[in-house]
Length: 358
Image 1 (cartoon, helix red, strand yellow):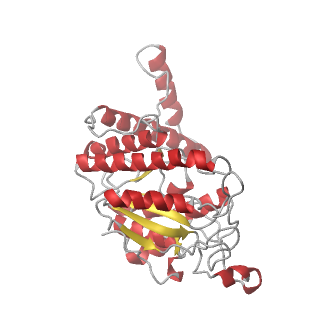
Image 2 (tube, one colour):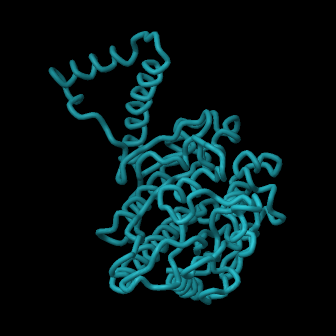
């Protein structure tokens, strides 16, 4: 997986100038050597918990929590930090097209979750008669006075869902038709196409600064890796290219940065038909604000038992996910003094800005 994504990145960079490759990036609490990893149990050197576990490492990437308990993600904390700057926006700063995610949960800021092609609406509320009656009854329920925090919070979520759905779908209905072609039969491309349409109607929505979350899966290639990987990586490549071209068409390519994050890379060794969970991996950053055609971070020595291998071709990251997130957050408008709020372990690393954004 490490080598395959690296090859994809190099191919894309050869003709796709606004793309940067961040090599061997992953969760770290502080810089770590192989010796420190091996002696961590007795030396007290801090490592992210439950390495090589899908759920835990997704949680690490989304929250940057280290060994702490966190109910917020780093995009959510960006929304907290920038709350005063986006207070006039009609829509939440964080918008997900792929379900609820810790990544966008703030301490105080609340994300908005919509569907892959538009806002999800309540059914049976339209027209007159029974539909109108159901809508009135629903409004009476959510607008009533409630005694408990849970009841009030639930009612507010429902009111916000209806308000945002009407706002989003009305705006999307007036969106211009993009001439950029997106790949067919690709859930990732469908989500990115909807993001492009949301950007196209940003003024109608009163949006000035947004973080959109989209997702794709299928990369847990314990089996059939050689057969599946070309299609998986091809889908990522074609979808990212189409989305970038759409931002160029809309005239916002320098204001939109697309980046990837994934729980971990894959082992250099084979299990016979695929690969297993590893640690450091390759991430891509795309947009006209990107210092592209450049490699950031450094590739490990691709050698079993090498200086970064902690077993089976699992490589200690050279770059932390905190550094990656802090670089993106700074470009997005977070002041340097507030970066530790977004990326709590950033103070443990000398390089706080990886330099891949202008």
